[in-house]
Amino acid sequence: MSTGGAWRRVEFGLDRTFGNAGNPLRQLGGLGFFLFWVIAVSGGWLYVFYETSVEGAWRSVQWLTVDQWWGGGLMRSLHRYGSDAFVVVVVLHLVRELALGRYMGFRWYSWISGVPTLWLVVGSGAIGYWLVWDELGLFVATATAEWFGVLPGFGPALVRNFIAAEAVSDRLFSLVAFLHIGLPLALLLVMWAHVQRITRPRTGVTRALALWTLIGLIALSAAKPAVSLPPADPAMLPALIAVDWFYLAPLVASDRLSAEAVWSVSIGLTLLLVLAPWLSRTPRPAPAVVDPAHCNGCTRCFADCPYAAIAMAPHPQGRGEIAVVDADRCAACGICAGACPSASPFRRSERLTSGIDLPWLTVDMLRDRLDAAMSTAARAAAPAAAVTGRVAATGAPGLPLLVVFACERAARVAESTPRAGPPDTRLAVLELPCAGMVPPSFVDYALRHGADGVVVESCPGLDCEYRFGEQWIAQRLSGEREPRLRAAADATRLRQVEAARVDPERLAGAIEAFAQELKHRADAPRRARPEETENA
Image (cartoon, rainbow, N blue to C red; front, top):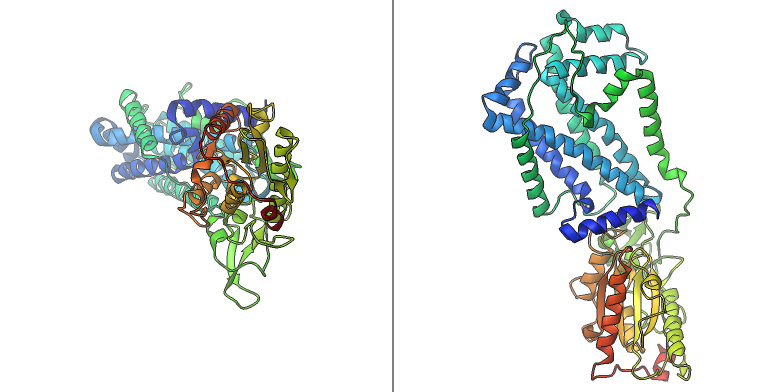
């Protein structure tokens, strides 16, 4: 099993406990933003009472912890455990995107812009321990100075500034406090840049997850409050000390091994992460293209693109606007093609051309594949059926013909129905890069040209490879979003199924149940006459 498959099975298992919408692994990005604000609010409370001086640093933190336990003590513990949780979420987010392959191709910018967060998070947390100025703070200050002391431009004098009591001044603590505020602000700026190439970024979590996360942090803070060690004494370094491994692991490694070795590993891993998008040899599909003659500037593709890869510009023919595709950002998901009003299979032309299309799967190719799949399915179940024009004009009565528009990233129909379909059912399957690529007019087309029913399969919510595919197609078919399914289309012959790649049984069950329902319906579907299929 691949790492991506293993990760999806873990997520699928948590879906059964929390539900798809409440699964924390599907909201790691938003959870990171939520924890950042928890850290910022609790840190702001602490800063109000903090004294930036050698004598006042430990004393003010101790007063907050002991005398103001109901406020400052709780906020300090929230700040500590929220920061630890933030590290866990950032690392899990990185591992998830790496396991699912979401770091290469058009996603290179989002991946690379996320790498600096690792350094900024660790740096912000380490400086926070420094500010307490207890024995642990002294260790952090000394170990950090020794770690940086091996770099060119630094030296033994830097270390002495944190070991000799006469060298530690109030000005130093003002600088450290400034860094503890400045680095998180830089982190927030990087987090903002990280989501600039996606539309409608999920920078929040569900209310339930936010509430339970906050309750968990408060409960942990009450059960095991964060406390200070004895005040720092530069004349006596502690021989043994407990550390926070979430933030201080590099300093411990530097103390146990060598600063040079830790620098080499840290820089090497950083470079490996930065180069990761270009280390894969997976070919990148061609981006969407716009046909100026058929683009009317409706902006639907612009509104639906998940990665802000489409902009609107003046039309070269001087009639309104035209969509312009940024090839570097384009995911080649086809969602824009599904949003185009000109992507209609009913148009009377030998070659269909849409305003925006994938060059390797145009709307014309899609119609041809649909016709061929329906024709093949009809002949396989009823050899004597007359095949005229593009689709089968007749079929064996009692054998429902289902057209399945399937997402390539969701459960595979072949794995769900290994015998080419449930018993007494004919399947015509079209796999697309994303369910959001399905133009609603193709559903109507299939129903009017011989299909007993249509199944549109997508990934579950929050699991779409291209973020909004399952949401946009659901809204289009329900009439909430343009382009809408034609009102005259029989919606009772349409089923939308959300099935994860690791859950083929769900897709198989939905197809079989729908087929049985159609089989026992009193009203037979209207079949297209041969002359209709020839002129379609």
